[in-house]
Length: 381
Length: 205
Image 1 (tube, rainbow over the protein chains, first blue to last red):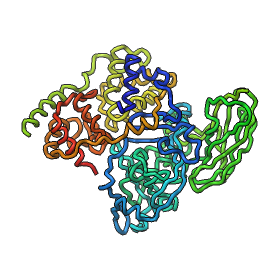
Image 2: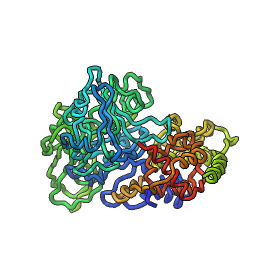
Image 3: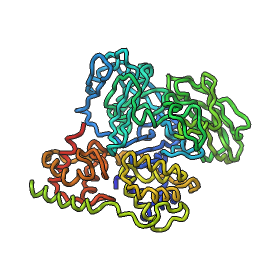
Image 4: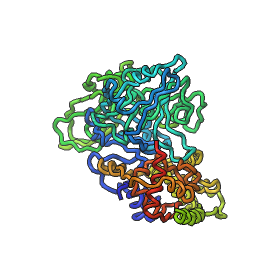
């Protein structure tokens, strides 16, 4: 019984007399502090608890997990990373050869583009992420640019195709492949990482190698990376041409977007996350702190405002300086509440003056949710 | 070796007998709200047998979608390889729209501690050694008709080569031994199981 998904399904069958009954249960087991929420129990889509997100660096074992098909099976001793396509010299590198190259560490937020999907109305299909499909780690590895320059980029090369190692379950299931425009691939913070928060990259986070693309949505942070190819055009597979796209201009629910209006997602959007107090917390009066993290894709966060009165008034929180592209910034606001029920709201503004909206415009994939963060709590005397 | 291969042929016959049930005479476009017990049971069976090959049912149960959206999702999954027979699509869509429609109460997801997550993906290596050539012969007669000629999946069984199950030896052996959903039990002795692993693991990159 080491497979929790099986345990959950079995519990549903036993207690409810049918598989559909599982959905009618209250939580099958009380959540341990810091436990992950299974948005899918196989392959694993695990959402972090907000308690795990109250630190600058999210612990590896409580960092959210997104899977398309489940961990690749890679034998590190036999593993070779291939760098080919429109390059002067095709490279095949062992892990030892990669580790011998200059090592770079960047702090960067990884966020599933579907984080917050469950908050859109009308609802859209996909893993029903709420607030915890996000986290920050210190990622270490080699610059993708160093690898590409070592291979030599031919003038016709405009995109860098990142081939993931997750084996699709059926022959007609598309493989997970993404393409980065060359300038983003060459950005000095874009890495091929083999460490996460100082530890070897965990299996669920792409061991032995993953892409790290600071400021951009998690879709591009390809895990179990096997191959890098310089190409003249974006990859034509499902995950570039159909999946992970948003209509521009937006469409209304029920409308069908013209294919040519669909844009591949790139940068994340400005967003604040309240990590303290926890949603549903009961605080014992006196002094409290409203705190969390804010990030703005490739930009920096200029301001975070917090409301404790349902949005009628807003106060500026103290915001820590940025630690680099794609990292998150701590915000804090001391708070001396009277006893009562509170709705706490937070909204961030980036350095171009864009403020996160009360609710973002709906899109059919449920991507890039960045509505005001919204936490309810009780203050006792 | 020959005796073991012959034994595997018997298994193939069993596999062939355990396909989806034939469609019943019930109308394929049963109204979504007033599903007959029979249509509901058929739709549930279709979902149970075909969706869980690739993902757990909580991914389905946590959605709240209208009928048109469910139909679109199911058709997408069929295009990705879910082996749902055409005559079973309407009943499955009806069950999905009925049980997981927009007005259904919220789903309560399960939680997993860090230890449970780690245990769920811990490598459980199969025994080393084994005769990959014999394993290939066993695979051809016992597995290939459902899991594809090269272990890459299809027409009604998921890929095995390079899939996470290849590092879960005990889970793999239990499924082969006991069967699961569409898959019948395949009684292989320990030596044959080791040979099968040797063949499937040899194909890993």
